[in-house]
Image (tube, rainbow, N blue to C red; front, side, top):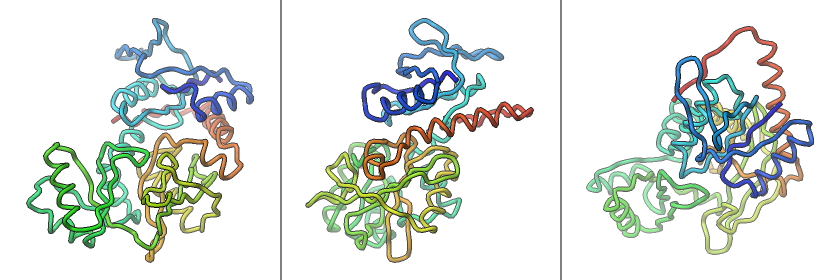
Length: 304
């Protein structure tokens, strides 16, 4: 196959390893900066152009940065309209990136999560905080990623100050229950298709509550329980993703989903587990291609 990796960071670990895995499997790999793609939106002949030339590929692997979700998802959707296989759909990417929409979809599907609240009017702060169990409380900007825009408010006064500041900036945010018993640790489960291909437990650095590796956290390989595996798969399917990094947290009432990431980094989880996740991703696309060839039914892709 000819496979295009949609990425603005061709030299990062994940990009280089995916390209190497594809080449090793005998595929032609190219890397496209999706922001430099141009689209001709025409009935019957949807086209994507890159550097003046029409892109002709069999499959794409989208790795869309959070800041460019709107345009990146549009490029993915254009490829889908042309019948190109994609590791993740535009719909799945868009739904997972909008934290509020994602949480609402997870709740609709019965996925267990920390108690979460959302409001715009700052006069409802007291009721909002009480609805998630009071302080300490987690405040999350809807547009944040990799632990950025996530704040722990330990007292009601600090929570009120942060919420007031967010409101003055007209920033949308979630208020979420703080799971104290997790002890600054969370779990990243990497899902490809209908399988959890790897998992690690991340622990926050001293003095930090965020366990993200980008925030100085450390990671170790972890064997998930059956309940945790089912929860990770359920969360991935609920937002219509096929490849996802699902963040879980262990609470006194069982595992809970924190977030679903449509472009999970590979470096941390490959280092922790010793598994070649990139090759599993390529094999998944090969399987999808074989299934598509064997099917005589043409399905219209889900569009955002």
